[in-house]
Image (cartoon, rainbow, N blue to C red; front, top):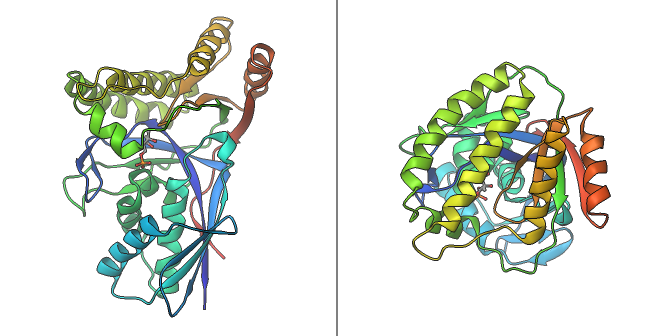
Length: 316
Ligand code: PMV
């Protein structure tokens, strides 16, 4: 027998950037995200008699991280036999979006169903969190909140049950030869910034304001809080006392300037950036084509994709 699950990736509007427990992936802040319809991972698990195996986009790849995660699931759900995990990422690597959120959410769902267990999404979010923190939010469609919690039980994600709204996310892919600092390593360094405590306090307030903006369908407010939150997160990286660094390239900075310019021209456009140089622009469905045109006008080579609000985990 085998089981297939599909989970979409998500973009954090209030970021997770720091762990208070690196084993359990307990974050230092609660976070809020938007799930993206166009970017997802489809994962099938099939029992085998040898060892855990990962086939990603039709290629047999290194299984270390998957095997480690499957062992956590074995601890939590009871022992199960080795699995062949066949995953297809419909997250264009060119879009520079991390696929770990959708990947660990889909894998958690597929394994649980394969074992014949029916678990709530809340309970799946606790498990997915162990693979990658942001995966806890990818069980849900549209807007999700991940409560930081103080232990394994209290750190879980749930749907915000937000009203429908015409939000869109324009993803601008920035080419980079710079060696990537992993999100775990980036968080570890950022926590050495003397500004980290201030960031935590600011994030608490932004978390409350973001929930209100989402419930009010105020896309301008959502964008403006998300941009503030993301830029202060990146300021932590620059001010880290240990191994300060940045994910920004000159092209990242150029795109940020273009976004500011078009905002001054009256378009609704706000930037957010994750553990890489790519810029994601929060806008509305009707403004998105204008944002794309403005970016293409200044940077004709730029690879751009537009995403909309997406659905939660599904099973075949
Ligand atoms: O879940 P991880 O370990 O890939 O970390 C995600 C970190 C950010 O994408 C920068 C922020 C977030 O909340 O998704």
